[in-house]
Image 1: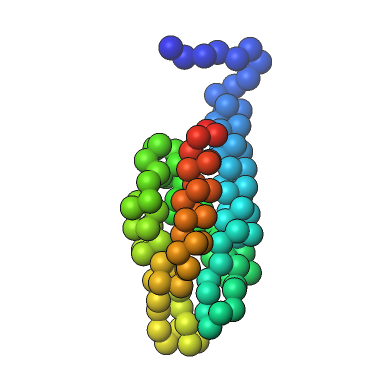
Image 2: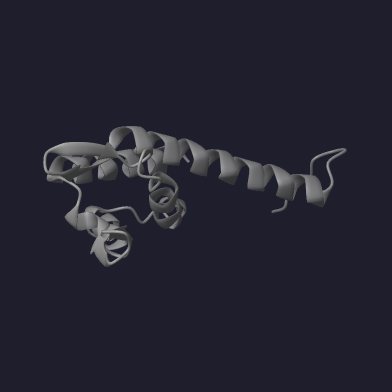
Length: 117
C-alpha cells in the first residue's frame, strides 16, 4: 500500500528520505568518532581525529538498514577498512588497530542504531 501525503510531491518524499539517511549517517559517524579509538603504543587516537569515522559509518550503515548487525559482520567490515601508515608505505586493517573494548563498543553502537530505525 502506497501512502499519499497531500501537497507533497514524489521528489519531496525522496528528498526527505535522503535527508534522514544523511542525518543518520552523520549522527552514527559522530558517535563512532567520539567513542572508538585506535590504540598505538598506548596512545588513543579517536576515529574522528583520524578521519576514519565517516568511512566506518558508511561501511556499517547497510548492516543497520538490513537489520543484519552482528559481531561477526561488524568485524568483517572493520577488516575490509585499511589504514595507511608510514606515509602510505604500509596498510594495516583497522580491526588490528582497535582494542577489544572498542570493538565491543562499536558493536553496541551499531546494534543501538539498528533498534532505533
